[in-house]
Image (cartoon, rainbow, N blue to C red; front, top):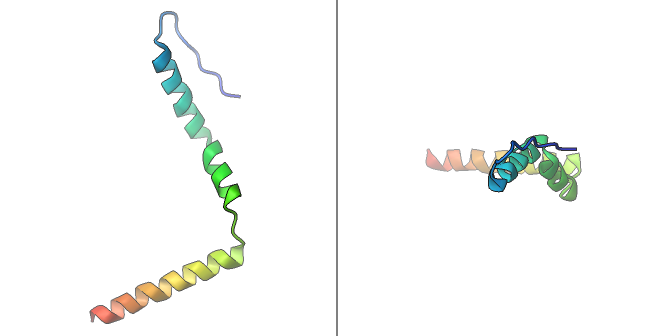
Length: 63
């Protein structure tokens, strides 16, 4: 649970900004997105391999 200490007379926008900063630091949103778009390790490896092949072909064509 995220707790934001609000000082007396502090602006609500400032408190919201603090909350958002703390929320982003926890990494909840990042983890949620990663779980929604889960890829099997074999698919990830294949994508990396295909990218490496593509980059290698680009370098060959430049020469």
